[in-house]
Image 1 (cartoon, one colour):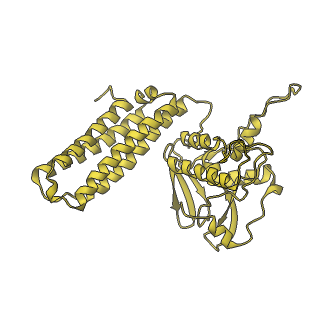
Image 2: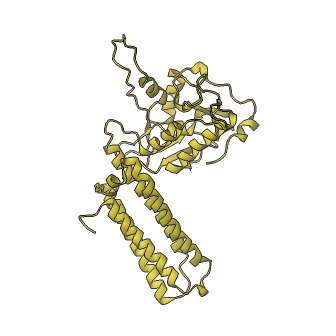
Image 3: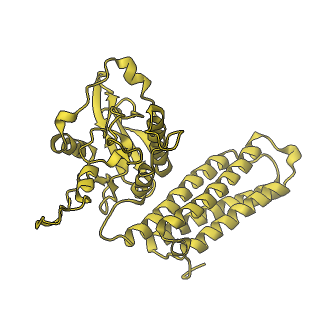
Length: 342
C-alpha cells in the first residue's frame, strides 16, 4: 500500500477484501438467514467473479497482463484506491454485523452491486489508458477496438466453404451487438434520444429522436462477390452501415447508423468533454487500400473526425453514395419485428 501501489496490487487488495466479506458470511449462523443474507452472499460472489474475469481478459488486450498489472498511472491508481476504501468500509460493516447479530442491512446488497459496476468500469478505464499510451498516433478507444475485432471475425456457414446464408448474417450481427454490450451500455438519453456510454472512455454516442435501437442492418446482403470471409461492416462504398429505426416523436421510419458501426469507430473524448468523436470506417478502409505502383501521389490518409453520430451520418450520406441508400421497409410491422430496446 502507498507509493508502491499499482493496478495489480490494488486489485489484489480489493480481491482480499471481497474474500474477507465472503468468509464472514460463510462463518455466520445460517440458520437465521433470510433473503437479504443470501442476496448479499450472491452479490459478493458476483463481484469477485466479474473482477477476476475482467483482469484475465483485459491484460491480453494491452500487450500482456504484466504491463496492465504493473501500471502506475495516477488516474488509475487514485480511482482504484477510492474503490478499495469503499470495499474496506463494506467489509467493516459486515464484521460489525457478524459480532452484533440480527438481520443484515438490505441496502448493503445495492451498495455491493454498485461497487461491482464501479470496479468493472475502473478496470476498463485503466486498461484503456495503457492501450492509448501505446498508440499515440491513434486515439481509437479500446472499447472500439474490441468491437472492431469482432467485426473482423470471418463469417462462417454451417458447411465450410459455403457462402454465408441469411442465418449466418443474422448471427454475425447479433455477435456484433453482444460485443457492444460487453464494452458499454445503451440507455435512454433525455426523453427522445438513445445513448451508448462506453465503459472504457466514458464517451457518449447519441442517436437523436429514436424510439428503439435497431438490432439488424437495413441491408444484409452487402458482402463482396465471391467472398465469404470479408468483414462486411468495413467495406468501402458498402451501403450496409444503415439500420431502419422508428422516431420517438411521430413514430416515423428513419435511417440511422447501425450501432456497432459507430461504436467500433469512436475516439476517446477530449479532456473535459463527454461526447465521443468518431472516424469514418469507409474512409479508413479506402486509405488502407494498396496504391498503384505508378501512382506518384501521396497515399490517402483520412484525418477528419466527427463530433457526433449525426455528423458522421451526414458524411456517410453525402460522401459515400447517397444513391445507395436502401429503400425503407414497406411496413411498420416489419420494422417493429427488427427492433427492440437494448
